Image (cartoon, rainbow, N blue to C red; front, side):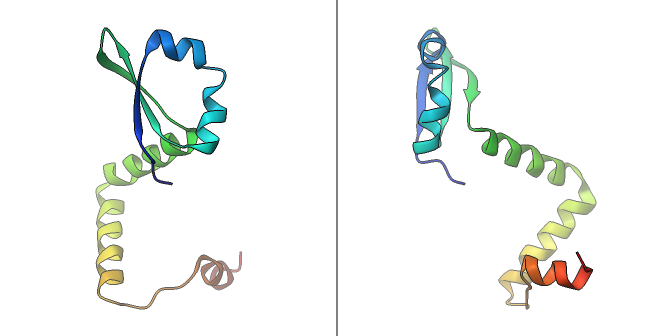
Amino acid sequence: MTTKNEDEMSISEARKRLSNLPLEFVDDPRCITLTRYSEPVLALMPWEFYDSMMATMEIMADPELADKLRQSIKEIEEGQPTITIDELRDELGL
């Protein structure tokens, strides 16, 4: 999922809109920078963004997994054959 734009909002404004923000994110997924005295202090984002970032950080923090990911990307860029997730499931008997 990609962000459409990044908004900036004061904490006091976010407090007023907090219960409606999840509905806004459905139509316009984005990250919102929350500010205090015009300085960024927090980021507010849809759960899917956060979950994806955490998974990416876990992979990148593991040198072996990060190397495997880099190698896989290189192989794809070189045009080596790939399989779909369904083919993988079938191959693994899942």
